[in-house]
Image 1 (cartoon, helix red, strand yellow):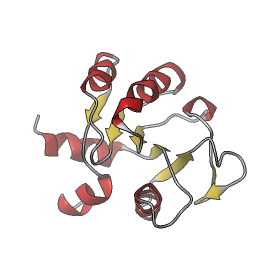
Image 2 (image 1 turned 45 degrees about the vertical axis):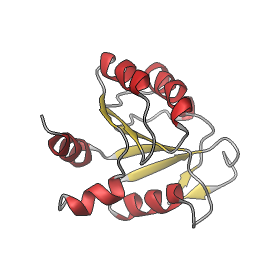
Image 3 (image 1 turned 180 degrees about the vertical axis):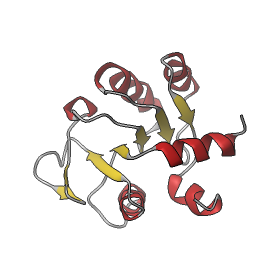
Length: 139
């Protein structure tokens, strides 16, 4: 399967996204991408321990960790340093119900974490942004 076909499959089957590394600051890429995805009809649950419980975004309470999300998540979108992705993937595998995909944002690359995710049956996209891919692919 081509990378574009994988991206199309993930984005067309995803309804609920856990966005790790969300920022409440509108000028930050994680905020802008979350707003874009919410505007496209995805349900986006922001994950940021410093904002958890006290801030809401798009009707969702910000969660401190992935383990606080009780709903089945389709995709985990990661806005963290590449070196921190392994812990996020491990938490997603251990605590989330039903994730199908791990998405690492532009500049976020972690081959070991990707291998762990794939071994757990998850699809993986690295170094791409859904807010760029959706219009590029006409989704």
